[in-house]
Length: 186
Length: 187
Image 1 (cartoon, rainbow over the protein chains, first blue to last red):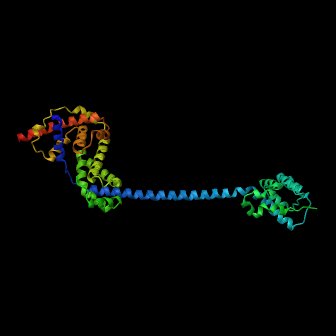
Image 2 (cartoon, each protein chain N blue to C red):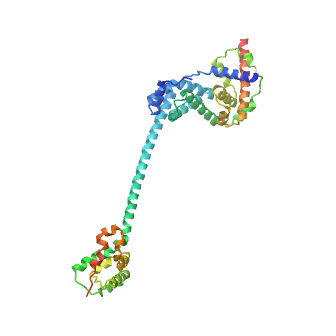
Image 3 (tube, chains in turn cyan, red):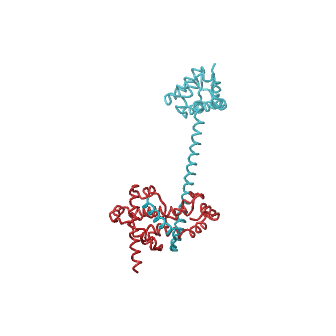
């Protein structure tokens, strides 16, 4: 106990001697400190600007990506329906403008585009007879598009149109064109 | 330590907003205290200047974390002490264990010299003579009020090592002071 008291007394004695210690630092330290602070501040600002640019770039990229994604999403549902458009529309125009040609002419293109021939055959089977006047339209059509023609030409698709989304009804060019292009021969 | 006054709080608030004029005011007010602490821990002006510069940059960088409910001077003192410890550990970590072997225990004869009025410089010189490891523990515990647990964590030593080094540092310092007092009496 006595030893502890001595220690505390000694510690207090030492501590009291250093209570208000102060030594004036050299002048150049202040300059060095504030120069370093200014340098850090500039670096920080540059960092903020760089981060801002990165964030803006990322945002722009993200927005662009979102727009692309949105477009894909909005375009995807009608894909099955618009597929018929390249075939249906030109055919419609040509059919109206040109003379009727025998159905045998279609056979010429069967070698080039078997799928187109199959689609045409399916359409012919479904609607009794289809006159495809324009061979260019068939040549320009893609196989994948023509596949859709085959599927569209099936009657139940048209008859069950009430089950289709409302947006399909709004796209008057694709969904309802096909029946209009078909001419039934007597 | 000085109590926080409204003016101090205002200056600190400005420092928190990055006001360089306020930073210079704070520096002007507390730099002498900071430098004295830095010298006490480093025992060399050149090292003290490095510690001082590093500590002040820490102060201004982290001043937003300071709460006005605490002592600003105490907060500054802690920062400079911690910076000095980092500096010490960076430079002296290989010599710490040697210090233990250098010191010989001496009898506790504080009674013999306590009536002698040592000046602060004399005490500082005596403390500076302590082996570095002992000196760090002694200064942290006795002068700056650290607990043994904090000292052990800061210096990376065992709690009991901190206690034993403090005990030996006291005896070593008392021995030095006793010798100084004997010399003073002869003169």
